[in-house]
Image 1 (cartoon, each protein chain N blue to C red):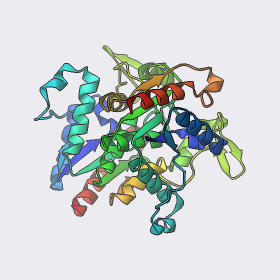
Image 2 (image 1 turned 30 degrees about the horizontal axis):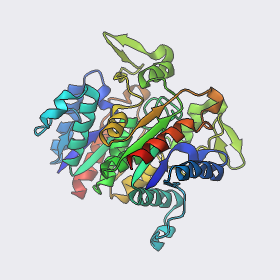
Image 3 (image 1 turned 90 degrees about the vertical axis):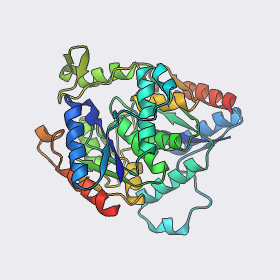
Length: 187
Length: 187
């Protein structure tokens, strides 16, 4: 089973080392991990004429189409939610009807993270919370926006969230390993 | 043409009024706007037994599948990127191969927004910027993560970004109207 490794991990200081770590864990469970910036064997030559960002986007989409499942790193990224590129890819794979798995290095629910992010700007409105601009804070007890949690559950995937020390947010791979094990069992 | 109206607009204080405003602009251009929480005529009875969040997620996915195009409100939401649910839905529709359009009430590029969000935590690393945890800041001149910009372009959609006064971030619909006009012309 080929699994697409979605996540902001590509932005880490040593992305090649990270790719090797993630792929090694996949291999231990009999899965083939596909890293977003792996070369695409059948890349259409025309894509090389595009700007780098457009080319990467098309190659990532092609990699996702070529995988049987997706595992997303939903550790909160510069705000209460996961990285936007990762979330896009989760939605993309969900629409293809294949299983989507996810992991996060925090177990703090989305609502609590959002309220912590808003700080004093959050205000109570009856039973609901709103931000400083009046927009409601989602409060369903999920790990992130309900589209993400809902997609993982409906697709037959698994969401593994666990707390790690703050300094290990981008290095601890134990939740990832549990996620890979769950994906392998489901194959 | 039926267009799915993705955005954090559902969190506004008066979502029904917002839905009416967006649908009216669509109608002026001959399009039918589909609001995420419109009732789903053919909703499977079993979904009513699910928790509310799971049910909404499945209904939204069904609404997207029933539309010919998607228009996303990518105005930055509690961080440098767009709302996670909106981004998920953009990726979902992109995977279906249908055109995705987007609008934002800021014209400030993603990199500049991210650096403003990071503030003093941002640090230069050669030609690149990194956040306080060492993760690189994407710097391709786009409006958001490259998967979003790339999908809009590749799908034949249009991205309309314009600055509005801070107080009008969630009320100004002129960028949305331009986006709807572009979608109507492409139909």
